[in-house]
Length: 304
Length: 262
Image: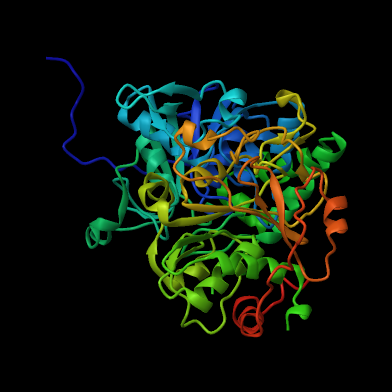
């Protein structure tokens, strides 16, 4: 006989943040969901830094925020695939992104947000590339040789071949999930679903784990039908917003920006390393991180 | 009332005056001038315009005072939403952009209407200044039926003869039929709108030409503030700023907090 014992009980997909982060090995390609100042799986981002991951290709959101900047600042990212890294009104350009771009510390995969989704689509479709029109005649194919101008075989049109952005592990943050990994977002979902479609594995941190009945009450809302793993992480997007829960924590974002900007302006990492020690490597776990932020600060982040 | 309008209010009016009812306009966050221009067009003469504001489809003519958002992800905009624009789906749908209008910024903009969002410096691997990245400007300037360049800094370092990197293609180096030959869907940028003036592009050379100067701005001031050689026609009209009615709309409903007056 032999073989494994087969359980007839449907397995829970709830995992700890450490287990989700352990799916990543140095050199892999990961994606981080959300959009600029919202919806980033920060408990997982902090865990990746704590784990000392190196040489990761980080697929930031179509507009990435400071979660990608932080992964650069912490030395986790060696390659960044994102059309934008910044924080709008807080900082037009991410300071670590600027520093790394200017000093050649990372490789930046220069592309437009439309190319970004074309690349994710190619990965989802398991084809080598997706064609795109815009970008012909620009310098994007010159600074990014992976974007190739070519003539299409149907109409002989000049197009850009955008290579598949194959993601090993995608990390997202959403509103709720059941224990089986059926995730429902609040809000517009940004590009999270495209990242899920392009990834071999997807872990989603959620504000709340809810009953299967609640998910089944409105299946049309299910955005990720079966994540690899679900992490319970209330305030899991802090210091960024989570639609339906809390707004960005401007004070904390500015604390990070001051530390990273000090590195950009002076080349001295002391302030940045102090930030990382205080808020990332120092806290024992997500709850400890939230205690360092403080309950009053967290409870002040109301949407309305 | 024209003489009391601020330069940014004049810019917003220039944007609004070019918008037509029925068009689709994207209003980004943290871009107060294009935001105000798009909303002014919508409130003033655009009952059938589709306004995308903070990732939502909004109709705002019944909204007495339109709050400004700091972030494109601000949930406050959802109160107006007739639909959510899920970002990946928005980018998958280019066909409807033919009716769209886009406003493109740039860390550099050149006399042929090319924009650079990548960085400053001849060595791409070692830039003097790393820019934010193309965001969606490469695509939006190729796909939307109409587009303009907009900058809040009329400065020789921004308005240059040749951008270091083209992330959004205008008219290249003025080659004849460049965009047509590349198969790009629109005909190129209509104008460059700055705090001092509006440029359009000469039909032959495709180089920037002074279309109008804002009230109180001299042609000399424009020339000395611009890093490229401008085509200056014999008669340069004054930019039509906001009418009295438009200024009231701007100050009471669109920009109540005075971002354009600061």
